[in-house]
Length: 270
Image (cartoon, rainbow, N blue to C red; front, side, top):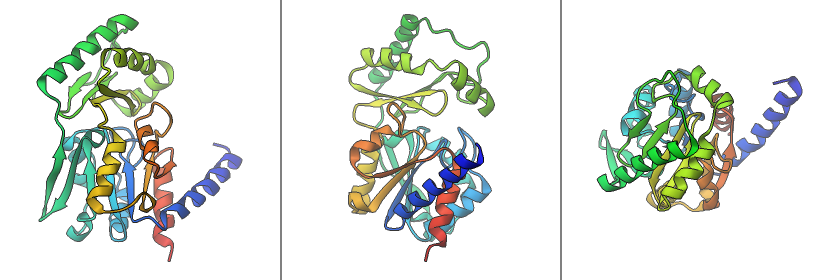
């Protein structure tokens, strides 16, 4: 990024940071926003989040399951218990919801897929692969299609692929939009979304991040003007795009560095 673009981005982020001042609840996407794709929460971000939790209620929403949230986020978040009580996590794109209460993470809800629904989704992938002539990469890392109970997730290179490999695949070989269109024909009663750099997430119909945002608003008794969503995929087809239909303020960012800037700006405001 040249200096002109960098300066323009800083001005844009500074203006966006002003939106945060009046918000009671800040909702973050996880992958590509608080962390790099499938990477652990960084130390600096962990410190900033704990400080933010001392001032605001915060929710984190992502495509991973509860266990992945533990590995990727919560393990590295060494906040006081009073701060954690201001944190809410929504794994599997809002299809499940947990809050910290009485020294433990307690389930608010979890909308699991039935075995029949899971079978239908797996069959849809098999038919869609044949339809588009999809060829699996020669080298993969872990499961290609993962059952996350509330969500089925396809990862082109596998669930444990290195970030650099995923970035290369996304830049040069990404065929998910074609696969998404084909899957939607087979699964009209399900949500099909692009996730991260190499993934497609599938949940029950209307169980998306918009649903998750609405559940946060109900749980915390806040209105649309009190909440903001920050994510890296608010474009059409992206896994954050559903939030747009809620009518709340949203902030499109391009990675953790942008988020750190926003949080620092908020924390230094009087």
